[in-house]
Length: 335
Ligand SMILES: [Zn+2]
Image 1 (cartoon, rainbow, N blue to C red):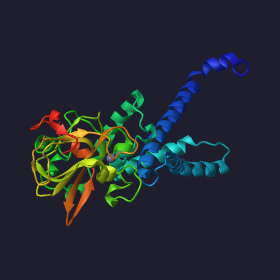
Image 2: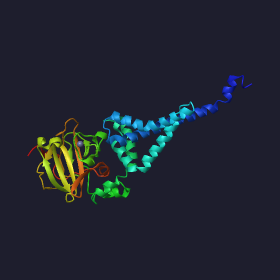
Image 3: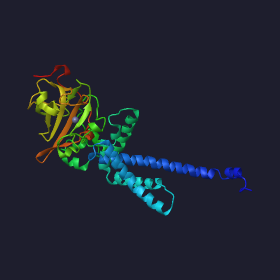
Image 4: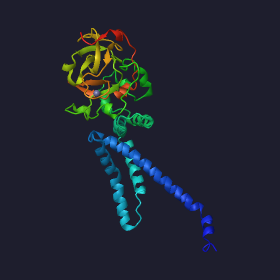
């Protein structure tokens, strides 16, 4: 009876294949999602060595699809069914587990700095929501590098986001702007690609971070210190244009405020500077092709040399600037 009636057969055994189809579809979707996550992690990790986006994508795809493809082909030799996704699923799950658990800080740092490379400078809703989610994952994984912790002077160490309670002690340092601004995309972050020879600790070249702002935005000292250098001549400043360099804590830490438009009057080498004091305004000096921004860098003395470190993880916990001293109207282009 059942064998001769196709309609009965379809109704009688309908739910089972449908459930199986659903499980298969769900499995494939999960495999695709996991594959995309693994692609983001791998491409962020290889970002140091491959500046061009296409190269990065190709290397990442080779790492992601090579082994599961090989396994699936081996299996195909025995049986004729070519099923890539179960192998890919297993491989990508293992890859993410090994990187996320075994190399948490490196993976987190790579994700924070380079996990959004395929959006380039884009800032649409998708890019924005993606970056917000990525920042949370990265911050959780990162817990800041242990190596950097040793390089930092004691007064900066409590600012590292290791323990939530430590963030309360962030009283000696503040953001250079009165509005919290952070590097908006990969090209603005520490270690991003820049041409020419640069110090080794700057990874692919960028020794600081770029904070976009309108020309004329006031720039404030991030901590008490002493003026080490003031360059008011745009030409002599070269790639940096007009800039100010400060020393803090007996020159243990140095900060630089680069590409300024105007520099505050009376700022001269050796003069003491208070946290929040106006140094100048955001400009475009020394910039070849870019929108106006403040290039901010922070270096820490280790033995006899100053080493650049990524200021972004610290800056996440610095309060915004509370201006002291001179007002923006009193800054001058030249003296
Ligand atoms: Zn820069």
